[in-house]
View (cartoon, rainbow, N blue to C red):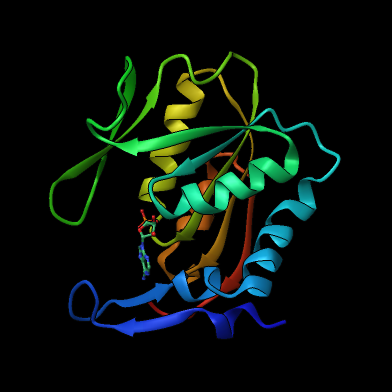
Length: 175
Ligand code: AMP
């Protein structure tokens, strides 16, 4: 099955020049969704993974399914101000301004083995902030896993330089 053909590309969304890789079409396809989750899980089956951390919002859908399949717990990494309990926050730079990602301070015990999941890695800013957040909480990052890689934007390479094993299922050229 070709996962790439199940991903819809929307040119110039959310702004001119961006090719938006829309995975809702992949998730809406029963066999495609199962295959994507199976492929994300496969390298880690039989490995000890305590928690799966998913990045809001598409990382919740994929990460929840991955956590279930690995019999791991799930940690939501959310945008600022969304989590009700005490949080740890990491800010990261955007093209214009900054954004922040948060995690409950008690979401994780020191030394727990964590797999990070999101739909797509582009520049890697979001995922690197997530890794920072998880490491501040004492996580050992087993891997960061994405359905889509945009290799020309360099995010996967940056994560690898930060000592994080990276696993991706499909790649698209360009932005
Ligand atoms: P980055 O921090 O640059 O790696 O961007 C990753 C985040 O932005 C992910 O959560 C993606 O869902 C979203 N994103 C960035 N670029 C795209 C794109 N071309 N198509 C779809 N989502 C994108």
